[in-house]
Length: 315
Image 1 (cartoon, rainbow, N blue to C red):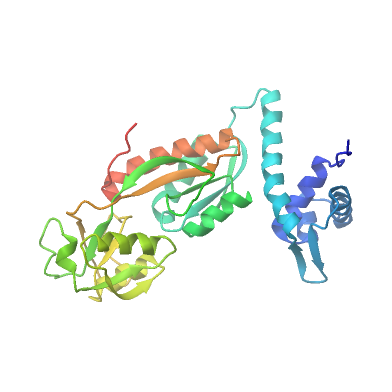
Image 2: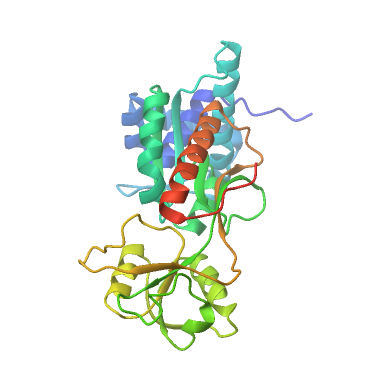
């Protein structure tokens, strides 16, 4: 029987910190230990594993090898699980405390994040929340790499192996320039916009979703302008450069450039987007993650009618 590597939790913690910072020096500063201790622990870990985990570049930091990337993903999950086991042994398994790192879909950030952080801070003062604002594809990558414990996002591009809880269904709506010929209608049919220029919210996965929604009219969209910024899209519509589709809806119709847009529901039966909290199926959810999920659900359901006019999620 082959001998198992004698790897310690300290070695794994030092490795994760160095891999996250891509620097032994920064890892030592964060851990408040000597750099020599970090270097020695990682060198010993590499000997135990039997392969290099980093490419050392003098004065230019570290680069993870393929083995290092794989170990980083698993080590993060292992250390998180150890923390949960120890909390349970101390009778603190249900306490919401410590540090949690979340990925947030960038278009949801201004609508959900402020209230989420305020409520988590009020209800769980011992919980430290770190947020990465990412596009849809990067959200999936962050979950799979173990960079984040959970994600608040649309159900776009998450792929297999990702568990999710649907918080709300958010239908798309049309925004029109002021004075548009359809602005007096309470609802707009997509067929009425055929032949008009569209300003596309150009983000991975989102762009395909909006194209597919418009294509339900039987005619693909004429995309005249595009931007990865929701507010830039709204500003271009306000200046009469075209119409657009969005899901997240501000309470006010004003734009950053001093204009305004007219928001109208879509009369056609078009697919909504699901707002979800997501996590890896292979990772046991911590009390921290469960608290975040519960709070996100409360925040989104409260904001849904005020901002999106979305449909509630069935219990």
